[in-house]
Length: 617
Image (tube, rainbow, N blue to C red; front, side, top):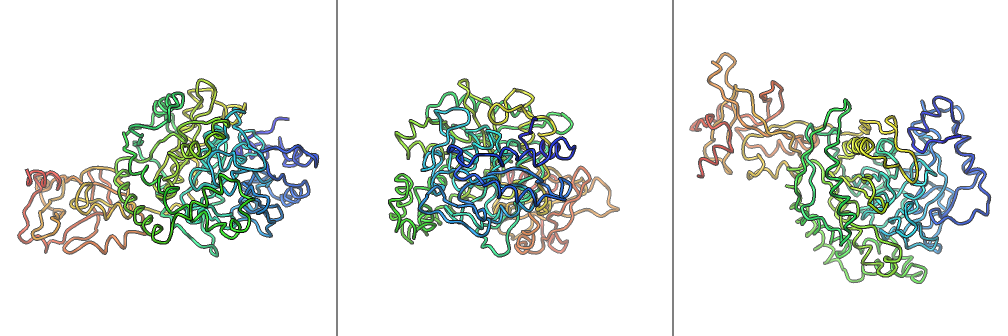
């Protein structure tokens, strides 16, 4: 009997009657009590615990439950009622009476918990080698690390034991293990998924992550998990972006990526860049992609704040009572990192926040030139021996492209990207502004389809390549997608102009640079600071040659931000409806006729940028 490894495959088999949940879970129910310790698992769920979940499925089906009969593992810093939570520290262990919010949602949707997985102790580490319960190696090499801290979760998915698993990700723990085990790793926008019932690492930055074999599988899981919980504190507000990909995708790529001398990973990243040419839409047509060279320096400066700045004190705050009374029960490397908090005080905490906001502002212009950022998930894949020789240094290297993401409130998706010449998995991560999770998952599905067409790269370890049905596109995680309003700007709000910041601080995204229809005139308004134009539509009965096509930029702005934006617009300007050259209408800047007294008609220049350039030359 062949059991599919993906959520999609299992649900299809349940629907057509070729499998039942009882058959899928038979191996979990018959494990002997004295099963040898597998370092990927800290605690396997007892047969009675699994059977009770199976019994709850009676009378249900994939038609009524979106994750009907899907086995999953849970990182052991996430509570599952009646199963111990250890955070990989036996002295810290407790048995919760209530499951974490995300676990409750998944079980209610029909998914079945089969055990708690191993991790770097207290989710502090990216190597997966800091646990008294053993060290899970990569599924592809016994000599190389699995990545951490969500080590066990990644390994059990890559081995095909569960269809998905939960991890956590504060500094890369849901991405690095995905890269080292040939998996998809979803790092949601901070605040998109509730963290109630999760042992915190940095409470203001923590995310519950997802490991799966395909982006479409991960999308099914995220659709169940996402959404705030009314009785839980919210540390990050999410502004959801349009759940669609642009017609032409601009992918930012580091100009000088760092691989710490790993030539194989450097070569794999070059091949990954070439892979974008294989992207196809649902009809098989090429999807245009432009690779944009990217200066990563402001993002790298943010990354340094996570461990070199005061945020390490938040890790100490999470377990302060325990570490003060049980210091000797904590892994020495983990304890050394967390006790680094003693070098910080309230003054450095405020200074760190000020510095973060400065750097965050410096990163905003990047997103006007790219839609997503593509980076190596990790710059190198260290051996277990090299980590033992230099545990802090090797761990630090692995956070090169991960540490800045949550500090900036971004969404990220780790994706498989083939193998090196020596058979080690290599992965990329695509990163986008917060709230772009749905679009990223659709992009991930397209990426996996392109990869499947060009290689025989397997999913997980020695598993079959994905079928078309398992690589569904689009993924459709759009349930909570907040609407955006298309807004055209014509003057001081254009990119590079003095008031452009009013758009970027509201997370408005450039959709197109275009022109109005040819029925407009543009005027330079006198006495405005900074200088502003006024856009006026000619009368319906006016001769067509009285009008001009005027250059504009169209932005997608979250509707929740429109009110505050409108409040900044001074008379005689306002927002109205503007016709574009393709005949479509968007909201945009217009001018009341009473404000044109003494204004110069500059329509002949075709736009404000051209007029200002001529004026200052």
